[in-house]
Image (cartoon, rainbow over all chains, first blue to last red; front, side, top):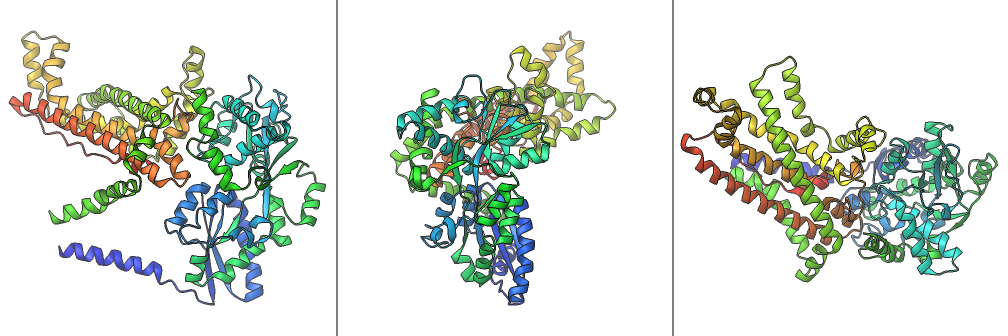
Length: 339
Length: 281
């Protein structure tokens, strides 16, 4: 019994330690909870921001990063991970933090551009020479084309893929939802493997050699081409696609408790500066800054594409999620019908 | 005693009771709707069948492996012995990625199977392969110590009385090994039923075809549907508990029946929490 008491005391003491971490003005530590493909981006951003923040405020700052699936990261924050800022793949996952009181409602209006300092879009990665002649979304529903995309129910990133396809057909059909549903249904008939995450799908397509086309975020597709060489893959930009806005937010509850609000807000604002935007471009995210965007486009990095936003076509994430990805939603109906 | 109870409570009972508490936010009819939805039922069938097949394969080949390890000596035996435990030690995701690489169409093994019309990855067969992989050590490690204790003189006596090799196996060896094989089978099954990490890479995760129940649970968590996820976890928990309980009974029954010469007590099967271990990986 005495052993037990000692163990309990130790546990309590440890729990106490992690709470009483006071922030001193000399240096500050931030935790950025992000999603998978941003690891390299934020390594570079963190180094650059630490330098600027030291110049501006004289305070040293170290930023720790945590990466994982967007939804999983959001759940960690809900369950108590002490994130000062989150930088996730979709606003729906940040919205999920609001009911637990970590974040105030209306967070998305606090920063410019829907709180998304950089954007991306959904493009196709095809094998060299584009043997199946894939140019646009309607080529993906043709018979004999194998499409690789993750499961939108488990992968936040893949929800953009699905919604982009839906938006394409909806525009083409003049707003006829039944036709859009049929189109997306035929597209998913061509999907032989539903990986749980975007990186899994990339592995399936690149390493396993499965499929004719991978639907991917533009930054991931450009990175895959850069890493595996131009002689293996090509990026195809469709005629129209969705504006993917990965949002960033300061977690009120954590920064107020830890006294890190100033640094955390400066950190996110840094992403909007010219320097921050240039780093985003280096990692193939489309910048918001007009001058930086123009420079990147003149280098031929990003192709022009007509973009629609989720608010325009779907009325925001909450509505899109409920209609398409909740249990019994359109995505489930597609598989229910095809079983 | 007090320490045992506290330890078990902290590690097993308290987390498991959370499953019941979380589920309690749903009404019984809501739980029923979650659990009997077409997709959940399909996934439960796949999980259950694939785990049974995998445990069955392991029961047969695990005994074979144990037999070779106990009765024969050959160079590199200790290395083979250590290899058996690898599926324990390896992160299951690594196992899944490795298996997929080998069994996919362009993989070492897959390139020979696919022309024969055997789709070894991204199919139900792939699920069974992954589950067999993670369950292998359980049968070997439960049967092996019992085998080591077996005396050879009974087999020699039987042989001198004119028994054939199969007769010796059936009449002498099997009754003594049976309880430990059952234990290994049960543990292998329980492990397979809750497995998530390795399966999602090789199965293809197609709803109604190769979607396992732990993946449906993850899907629900991804929608922040904690209650729905735990309702399914509850079903998995009850399924494996009932199965383990039955096998435990069966085991003590067969142990009592064949124990005129008291076979070595096999390690008891511990009910593993499938949801908990699977989701964590």
